[in-house]
Image (cartoon, rainbow, N blue to C red; front, side):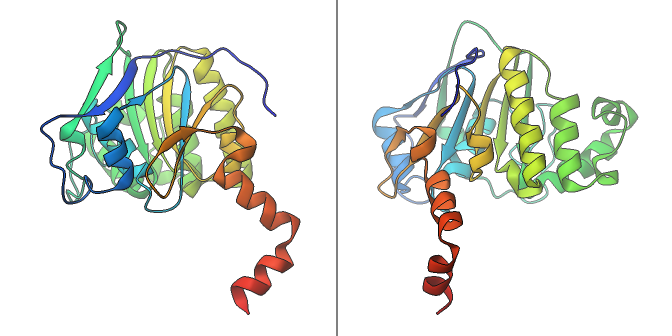
Length: 248
């Protein structure tokens, strides 16, 4: 379905759970985290998507990568150190990142559910920080517009970027704009990990798609076989059939 592109950079080579990490309690009893503890996870260059059902552990894993890489659990860069309510799991402090020989020149965690708090902290940090966001406070733009602003103005070349369900703020056209920006960033030596349910974002040429199963296995899948793509296609092909089942 997709055509090949340059693969981007690779700063983190692999993820693994520390040997002395807990084995019981959330999130260590999640099937996906148990799978990670057993064999680790190879992280390719360029863009990696994580897909799976709600509760599969996608967001938990992206959050843990952010924390292990020195970013704020609620979002932002390394300079963001606020905590509205500390609800992050303990996986981040027990996740080991195996870095390559190159380090990213920039890092940012874009998290849909707590972006309002990032916007508030951006204003608190003052005009210099707002200038980094294009000179406009994220609170003065719509949710989706501010997401795209961040990716255009704050995501630099040679960076490591983590996104948790960015489509939550985006229209279909907004998703297409983000897809185009991801392609640009790939060409600019960035490594990006995205937890998503969006069939539009998953269409990015050359990206790796990891699907988390109900049993916790994490395997690569092709675009056409990815869960969000299959379900969306099936629904659009026969919406009446789905509606009869869901409503009646």
